[in-house]
Length: 315
Image 1 (cartoon, rainbow, N blue to C red):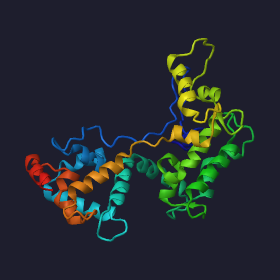
Image 2: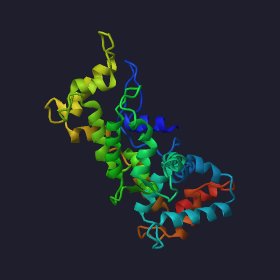
Image 3: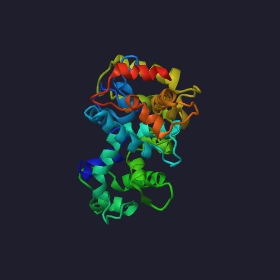
Image 4: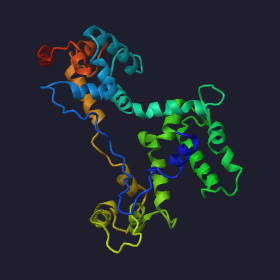
């Protein structure tokens, strides 16, 4: 991705697409499934492997011997145990699963990192980002593409400061990830809502009314008859989006719409893995408990599932 492409995707809209008149623009951020496999431990542990490692990484473990799988799993456990107390809690496991599921996000940031870390100090300052992204555009008061780069820069700076937890205007890799992918971080949710509202709120009154809501996802473009899905969206706005029935969505109503409280798949899977592996039932896992149940967490080419089920049922 070029700098210009990144600039447009990052600054113009949280959903960087140009919709056709009859295409529905989806601004809702759902919690994705952990795997496309069926979660049935009576058949296999493929779902758990995908959930714990991510689907791509899970495939690599299938080529390992049990000994190699256990060794690599042990090293992973050391990473999961972030407070280094010798135990893996449900919370730490949940955080790991979420990170494994978002590997594509981290890979994307990794690819872009070198472009912005100009002095190679392991951080990206706001000045570095601004100069790389906007330097050439700010010199042109009337760019041919019609974009207001100064306005876009102000918006980016606001988001950068929100992602920058310690306020030093310098981003660590994690903070830069939050800047580029704010929808993935709880502490960035307010900026996601704010930017979405600014995109849709054409009259600038701080709310999203019905016509602004429909106009964001559908353009009549000379058509007199609306598609059925547009009529359904009008009903959705009245019945579910506008909770207080005042004819418009405020910040909280918009948040409920674009960031719904979905079922937390990572939390459920973390609870499941702890329950199945916690031999002494103290509510947390040692490395030994996890490695002993390695077949649940990771695969290997020599895993005998029938034998694994016997050990699985012992607990």
